Length: 311
Image (cartoon, rainbow, N blue to C red; front, top):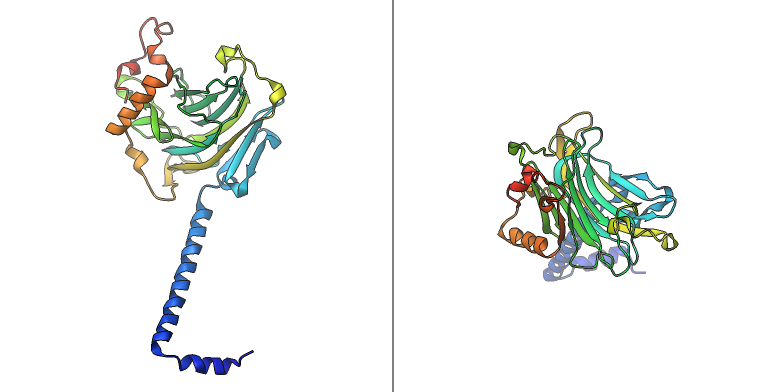
């Protein structure tokens, strides 16, 4: 092995240009290491199910995998399963990627929704109603305010939601609620308190997700039952993002926003011209039920919010 003192003296005798290159290479190496460390820290601070949610029911049917990046819920004849966010929020944007049950999912309901607790609760629902093999899923949406729901709209999807992950989002601010699929708006529920329509704005809500059996109503009005020979049924969740106003424990106020990129666009988010065109396309092509068009259900006249602006 070469003596270190000889090696040092040889370096000192190097031409100045070579020494400058060596210093530049050293600086570049340090910069690269810092960049890699920063990227790892950002990844570590991204959504992680271990940190963000608590199991609500289902025992071993609830599983967190891939270091917290993937969560699966299963359903068998004994029980379904579910989880909730650790934080409560008063307004925000909430995104979740789901891959739904493939094949015969009749009788099953997969959910992603916001809800407060207690009497007169508020709730904003995405529910995915399973179907027989080869038949499309139904997306069931609803809005509850002060304990009153009954504001259902249902849609088909323009893709197979069982073969890959897709993003489902709820934007909830003081002006409106927007439901989105892969960032395409499918429904808007506007704040029409000025017309006497209750709107969810005072109760903080958690994010809830679950998988459960509802074969008394979920598929074709309950005519098609769950085939338990195919159990367990499994749905997958990933990339949960809750970018909103986090409720301060013991208070009705918000203490902070919870966002990696500090993007607060959700606070006033609405639909631009492109968004309005997209929602018209969805509602013309894929909407299969709208309570605001159900004259049999409302023979005395539609609810007052149905007469307002849709978008």
